[in-house]
Length: 133
Image (cartoon, rainbow, N blue to C red; front, top):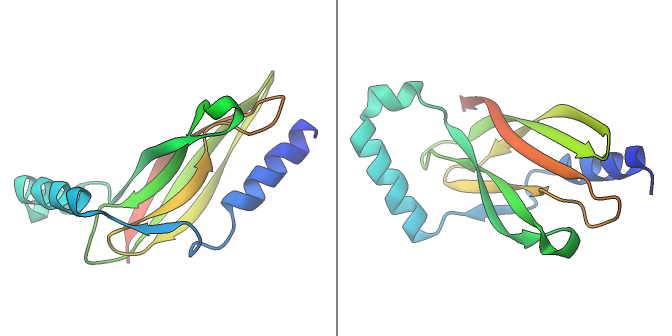
């Protein structure tokens, strides 16, 4: 598979329906989020970023990558987050932005930080914008 077709394939997976890969927070994550909110105060939180990236189980080539998720910090309202994806495969690299809608108290899967084929493509994810809906 060529670099362009691999990146195109990964982009198609990333850009699939938001309702796929949506997971509710577990009780421990909810408690931690509530604690952060209480410490910050409502006004300070209003200026804080409403979404962030977290990583889960291993994936990709030789299980050397991690599953990435964009997490809605808000439990009461949905968030629309702009995620910047940077990729690198050998000497080729690039980036693109995607907008994901994250239900309240949930996280949406973004994909693996490493592709499952050779040559391996590396991906990094960052939230560059978020809007509480």
